[in-house]
Length: 360
Image (tube, rainbow, N blue to C red):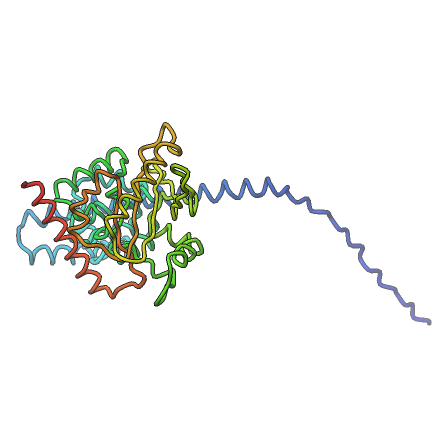
């Protein structure tokens, strides 16, 4: 009997064409999903921030009622152990201490409610351990206005941004009025925008260099330079030609500040500030005000960025009335302790001068 050989036939594969969505459709739907997720995350964080404030407020009320420090430590530790077992590490003893400090640093729930729309709980944790109330309020409001992430906020605090603003050199009452206007009206002033000194170590300027080298380095590192200037600055021109009586003059850098709604002229000087620099800047500002300023804009202001300045010279020139700000620049970042000492001395000196002027 002959064995029959059976031939195996390969199954016929049917290829089904998969319809892919159009790229614009896919992009739009992806963006909708991402935005919704981000919105949900923001809403959750915002809700938790208010919860943490309320918890801190309630616990603090109980502690203050007893007026005994040892009772406060015991009750927070006991409550933290109980809550952590039930709700996780977010309500541990350490977390409860953050919440209590949160209420101490920001006692007004309405201010917290307004800030939490832009600031996360991580932002607040960076702020609540700053001892100076003015400093806390400054960083909170500027962070809200400029939309800093927590890394940027920490970097600004480390670089002592507050101490480098004109606001920190004002008497406390005047500074509080300015911050109140910022909080309630989003009103920015030059004292909130300009710094002194500016730290431009990122330009890589070493040993001997000319003004044109500095200008070229700024243009090369424009993103980092604007970050040091602060959010709101938009670069317009370099070597802006200004012709007066048939004579050409050249302004080093021209910016526009969106929040101040005005042109900002910047002159770079390698040496110390000299009184003649004021006249040069006044000429530039007068020309810009006449020929470049738009009807809806404020009067142009200027900044002279120099290697150093003598305080009495600057004071006698009364530059505030001219809309001119004098600032030093540092091409190398100082160690933290030295930076703190220098800025603290500068702040104390400036406040003493202002108070003396008010007394006169």
